[in-house]
Image (cartoon, rainbow, N blue to C red; front, top):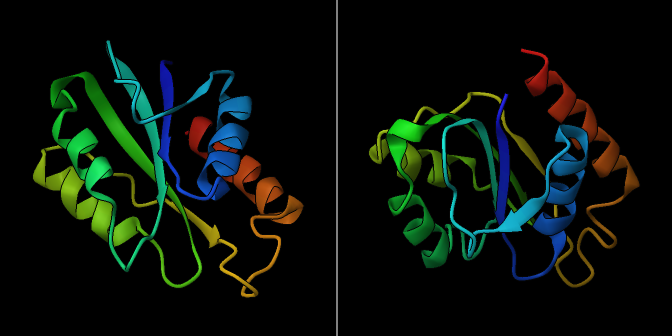
Amino acid sequence: MKIEVRYYTKTGHTKKLAESIAKQAGVLAKPISEPVAGEIDILFLGEGLYNFGIDPLMKEFIQNLKTKNIKRVVIFSTAAFGNAYGAMKQELEAKGLTVSSQAFNCRGNLGILHKGRPNEKDLQKIEIFTQSILSQ
């Protein structure tokens, strides 16, 4: 099975999740500045929620994906409030990609809110989530 992990982060929170996913999948987590190439069974794609939406750089990354080469996208995100799943799913499906109904979100640190998040417990949860996705 071919797995890729891509992420966008301004704070480093989503990168922590991406690295945990990649470790479980035996691949490298890469920023969205690195394009996805070849046939992919699962693309784990993550970012934070910024101003209640996804970043324009993520939108551009999604628009440049080759839909025929990607079987399924699994979304993960961090946010102080809400999550990026709905906005990302909308962009991905508009592009013609299949989005998993299973997603992972955890709180991200914003000032004094959710201090220290994502934490070890969050990273353990995403490892279990990743194993679940990979075993399907």
